[in-house]
Amino acid sequence: MKTKLALLLVVFVVAFATPAMAARNIKALNIFPWTPVDVEVPLYSGDLESMCLTDIEGTICEVNQEGGTLVTKDIPYSGTLTVPYSGNALFSGELPMTASGTVPFNTYNVIPGGGELTYAVLGAGICGDVDETSKQNCCEVKGNPDGTVHMVCYKVPAESVISNETFTYDICQAQTVDVSWSYNGTAPFSGSVPYEGTVEASYNGSVQAEYKEYGPADVIFAEGNVILDCPTQEQVPTQAVSFKELVTNATVGDTIELEASGYTTLEKTVTYRVVVKYAKPGGGVFKTVFKTEKEVETVNGIFKEQVAGGYKFEKAGTYQFMFKVWRPNGMLAGKAVTRTVVVTK
Image 1 (spheres, rainbow, N blue to C red):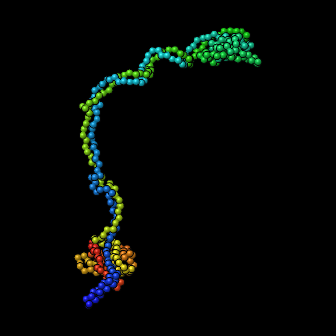
Image 2: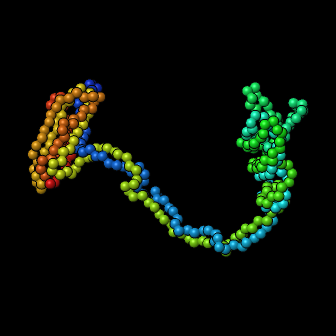
Image 3: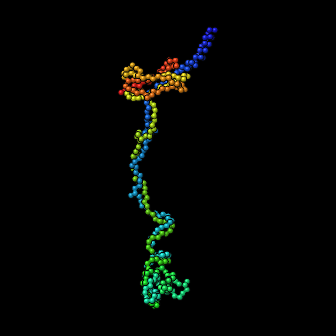
């Protein structure tokens, strides 16, 4: 009976003691002295040989233009050829023309006292008494009411036209005057004319072509050198990466950032302390040179501390960074976590 009672008491104590014990689960996790680091990380492999390019220089492979065999062959051809020609050629159109001579010209004295009459036509006679529609290559002298005259010509060929020619006449006397004339221009022509030059002609047959044939002996070949072009490390593209680097060694004057963290399962507030101890170079005795103590609320069981402004090393020696956490009843919760930094001049 006593044994059963004792067992029941143990079960009762365990059942009601477990939550209370869980409530005391508070622990310092880490203290982290660090410094910010910015580095350029290569985007490609550090094996630069995998990024090398190869090229071949000095290779010669060409045909010797001085060699080869001259060959003449008939090649089928259908098209237009330009060929030399000397002989008569049919022509229809305008040809350049130069001519001169004398022609009789019939006129009348029309102004009393005689004088000069300007005419514009050579070789055209007086039309005479013919129907108006039949007048061709002829002229008429027309009187004006004021006593002056003018000349009207009908269908005179272009080669007969000369302007600004004059002749002298007597009053009321018909006369024939031989007038010299010349002409330089074009005249219509249809027939054949002598021609020497080139003409284009349609052709369907074969033409002779002359060219060179080359063989293997006409090929010039020389091997070149393989050039390996590898980029330097500075030419490899990089990307800036920032991270927090743990500090275990430093020099006098360096400033580091200092973070500490811990957790608790149920407590809403905790009290913790950050302590920095110092020992001289070669010495084993540490003394406290910095301390901060705070009570803070936890967030999802996590609590953190970051020393504002970081910590600056004033002299050489060994620095010990320590993080401690206390329970609400004032007792130390678990072990303190530490980090050591060796500082040189």
